[in-house]
Image (cartoon, rainbow, N blue to C red; front, side, top):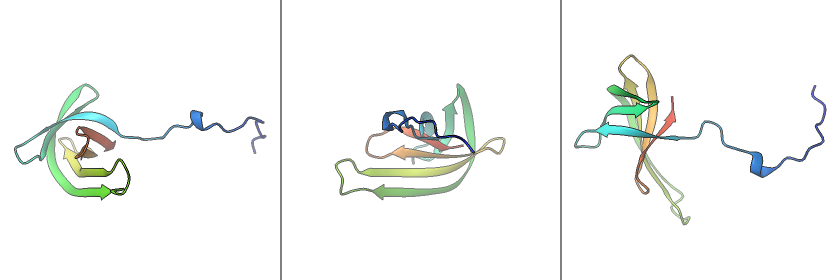
Amino acid sequence: MVAHPRTAVRAHRLRPLGGPRRIRVEHDGAGRPTAVQFGGERRPVAAVQDRWRIDDEWWRETAISRMYWSLQLEGGRVLTVYRDLIGGGWWLQRY
């Protein structure tokens, strides 16, 4: 058991874990990812395992509209990436 540290919890010290990271994605004319670049390395996409769209919080000032892709890279690694359909840009969700 850990003793109470006697310090107050402060919201400004909290941070999300595993949040999305901006990445570069090459895609074909239909918008299908063909390669991703993160960590300074370009990695070709071997297969698209799945794709789905999320449209949420439409009632708020800032809605969410994203196209998600589950990608298998050459070598077998699987990534989940999404394209922000409102703000633009590609993001790495999970790897």
